[in-house]
Length: 247
Length: 263
Ligand SMILES: Nc1ncnc2c1ncn2[C@@H]1O[C@H](COP(=O)(O)OP(=O)(O)O)[C@@H](O)[C@H]1O
Ligand SMILES: [Mg+2]
Image (cartoon, rainbow over all chains, first blue to last red; front, side):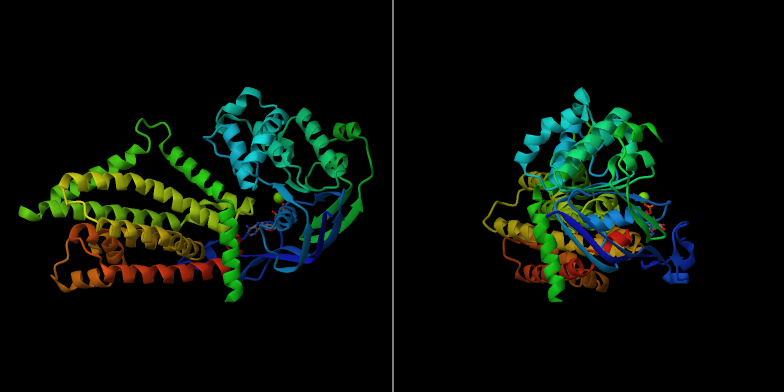
């Protein structure tokens, strides 16, 4: 059964942890978020006592101001960051889209990049082979697929990244404010694919500043502020057309 | 300690299952470095031959030692350049892989192996150059050459450990990039790469005896030049390899989850 359970999870970024010969106060802390401590022992409390539970079919929208901890939370869910405290239990195959360009090589063609991405995601050669044409078709990149990646626009890169990430039908899909890069028709298509994914009893967690996107995709909304959960509410159901029409 | 080792083996085990990732990435790396050039990676061979040729030409002693010296320099430079490249590229390794480390959950050992393969491929061109020089300058092919091959294999097996240790050093201590860079540049003069040790002055004796690189060079060089098995060099190199692997496993086990916060 696909599920996510977080219990009192916290994450601290320590600054000045590295040994360096430079004067301690030359390296500056971040401007947003919660900075604590002083001198050599500064740290940012990026997540603080975060707890929630998601079950199959849930689509969670993460909202909150810049520096609230959305990206950090997604990376904790993906397993990139080990939390400084608390417990996480995740059941299901997780895939994530953080930075569109990660794992893409500028000099390689789109087709070659699909292979590389697939390998990085741990797919077998047969799975890559099998999904290749689907991915190319879904991305609508046409003949561009055989041009080097550096010739792609950001939107085209986003199409390719999304097509690859969702091709193997991950049970849990994490996404960080990137989807705006695609054009309206692709966003509509991406939304449909996310619907399918959730209907197959998957979980989606999506960080976004776009109210329209949250309302059209998500069933729950988690508001973060200064690393704490401010609220976890249900998103009222709206038709996709109405949601996309509003900003 | 035990849990650190378990963690390290888990990382290595997962990386081995993803071996097609690092093999593919290493090939892309080599391809990218030489894209748009006419000779492609053959430049590596040309570079090596130009360098070795210069040394032979400038430092070659007169008389009957001449041929032996060409072989001495050819093998010495091949191993030295390999080690120098491996070490100087390892220190900033995790920084260089930042976007992958912060965006994927690939085990760290994947990056270690990516660099290992990349360096081994590049060294392959130097090996070809070295064999060309050996064939021209003429030490005769003997079964002892197999010991040299074993020596190179030993160096290759030590490489992932070296990379891991230096990569963690670079992540924890950013200044080390410049310290190591300088040491490696100076190191060429303190290591018998192109000068021959014959018990001269004190400094040379220390640089010869107390320098682990001496033994790394000797395992590949002595069998071909002298025709015998350098047991001393193999012992020192083997022990160095074991120590490096032990440190590497501990670092990987204890600190692999911290790296993402350090880069
Ligand atoms: N690598 C880092 N080192 C130190 N602080 C960081 C790092 N990444 C994020 N932070 C801090 O953690 C807090 C949460 O950041 P983030 O999760 O990126 O917020 P959001 O995605 O909601 O804008 C911010 O205060 C930010 O400054
Ligand atoms: Mg963010």
